[in-house]
Image (cartoon, rainbow, N blue to C red):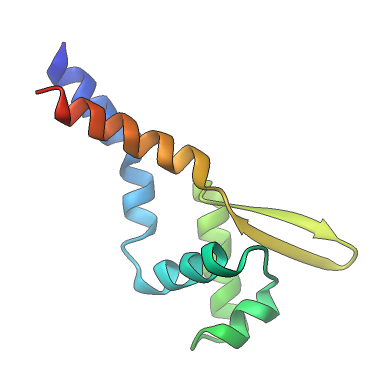
Length: 99
């Protein structure tokens, strides 16, 4: 039972680990965590990536559920979605510490 719980916890958090294997996505998430809600243009000004590259990474992060987006007029404002990530990491940590 314990082995299955640990494996389930790893499986739940693997998409987060996979999305953040890329250093550019780590950088984008760091900017969002430190500065809060940002647009693609604001993020592009903060990192050494083109606007299309930032948009591509944001789409991947949005699909993975690690960020959310809010439409404000013509702007799309992105923000981190940390609660589910933290919950998954806590579950994994608890499962590992239980052994």
